[in-house]
Amino acid sequence: MKQIIPDFRIDEPARTLVFQNHRIQIRNETYFMTRAVVPDIPELLEIEKAVYDGKSPWSAKIFEGEICQKGRTLYLVLRKEDKMLGFIGCSTDAITGDVHITNIAVLPECQGRGMGNFLVTAITKRARLMKFKTVSLEVRRDNQAALNLYHQLGFNKVGIQENYYVEDGQDAVDMLLKLR
Image 1 (cartoon, one colour):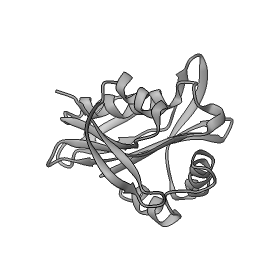
Image 2: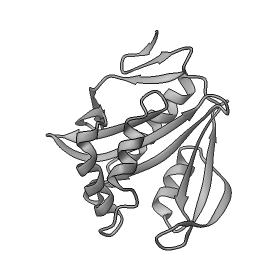
Image 3: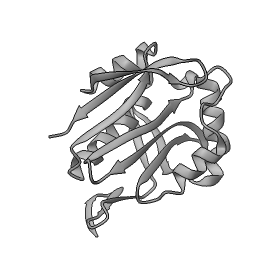
């Protein structure tokens, strides 16, 4: 295995992500970033409910499937004093060279503190180091705060998926960040 930076390593043949839990600083605040594990699922669901007006777009079973796909997926959580404040998930595709951000959420009372920016940047930096070509994601067409964040981080709109979100028929904006 090749060491890249202290918290991530690459298994070259499989191009998988290995993560070591560690402390991080965001705007002079200390947090603990960990890899999500199955016992974290109730907290992941609670964050989604807080963000999405009492509903969680993903079920516990979906989260479990994603978290257990070690090697192809990576879910990271931010904690402060043992309370989960936000998370991000991604999947990798070595054939297309894409890292796809599958889910990201930060508690509403913690938004605006740089956590979302940090989480997306952490994934894009690692994708670049691992020689992936792109980072992609979908975002609700009406989520202006997220659209602004992604534009600020260099993502470009590449398409619209009409009626993408089943629960309300909302369109999704496809966004892409080219890494090379």
